[in-house]
Length: 440
Ligand SMILES: [Fe+2]
Image (cartoon, rainbow, N blue to C red):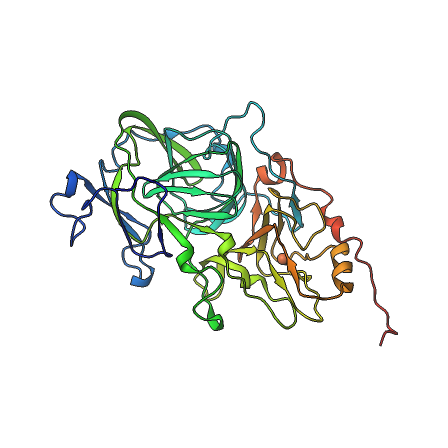
């Protein structure tokens, strides 16, 4: 039995086993007639039973009560109009968009991790298991006796401000800014706020799970290494006659049910469907050591693949501190138009591609085929700089949610949040012709 509840198992999607009491996992089978300690056996499936073995994800939970022991669900009013899981009627715009930092909870506002979720953009539909949603969370209240599970998709959580102390069915996870956490569909958890108010970003995928990108010629090592992903160890509460709320996000609506005991009563578990976290500072950066700016796919931490080889429903990409050494090269991100949509956020510091306006806690969206690139000041400086090996992005962490789908923007994202910068397009207005037909 562990005394420190924040203990982790290493490895990405590994089959783990974890016991909070000795010999609490059944030996040799999943559903013995009677489980050790009189626990109930319950399977949580993350994939269809019949997907190829290499894709199959499931865990067996051995718990004090099965999770079916709760009262009926009814709609939860708070925050329900803030979420979206079908983007057929959301706003569409080909314009470049940039947001000032999203608000932390305001005076008099009481929101927890669930009621403080706001959908900004997305594509597709959770009901048909195709697409994604991008959310901002802001909260200033512990969830305390409230737990949450998302029936729609997997959450990739990117804290920007404040730690998240997350109790899950699988154990406890403390997530800092500059770490990320993935909590898959169906897994129950509760979020406390040890540092007070929090803010961050979430990439939700409806139809598949996150995986590590293939490395191709890079070889077996580099980018995000599997051993650096950690999963919590079993931890349980034996709490009877406590009133708990179980909240679910089900097709973008919140529902709540009462139960009279803690849902975090899993004494032992085994399987490969479990939440995990990753420290972005551990990313092993690959880049050009000769010339040219390499495509940002070299910075992919996690990907959610589509059915088309090489095309992602969503990639999670970071722009970490590193050396830039390329010769005779315009080193910042180049001007481009992309067949993918790019939603960017900033965890801390300054992003190398812009001189201002893109701030920690803010965001930008460059949708499919919407042109963008460095502003005039960055272009001028990088075009004339004497090129030496230099450190890039120290003290910063920008990231991108990149998707092959066209993103629509919610009413909250485009209007109600009141953070869209109307003058963003002017960032590029100063890029004048420098063409000379007589230049040799
Ligand atoms: Fe871009």
